[in-house]
Amino acid sequence: MGTIKLFAAQAIAGAEPLAGPVELSIRATYLVPASWPAKRRAKAAWKISKPDADNLGKIVADSLNSLAYADDAQIASLIVQKRYGPIAGLTVSVSPLDS
Image (cartoon, rainbow, N blue to C red; front, side, top):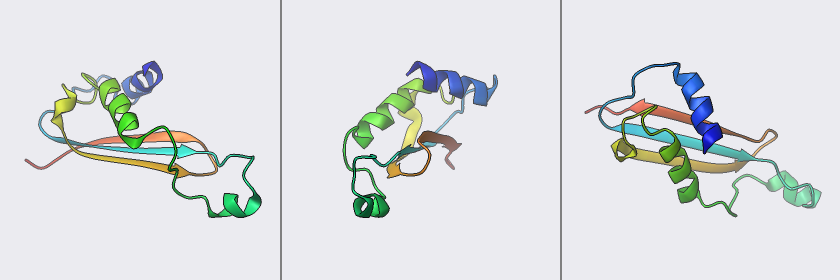
């Protein structure tokens, strides 16, 4: 959780936390296991093994408390995706929702 908070603080660069309802969008990209056969590797798209999407959402939401928003209770829309891709990483965006 510390790494997410650190990167978020750098990205936010001292801006005030959002007020009101927000949408949190998370895209976790994983490398396809090298042990998989080439045919299976070529078809890999969605990751359906652990970690669970709801656990990823909770970790990221908690990490952004008091940085991106005052409290994670403000999250009115949550999108979590787990995909395979050529570069592993985590992409997070927080957007205000129209009131």
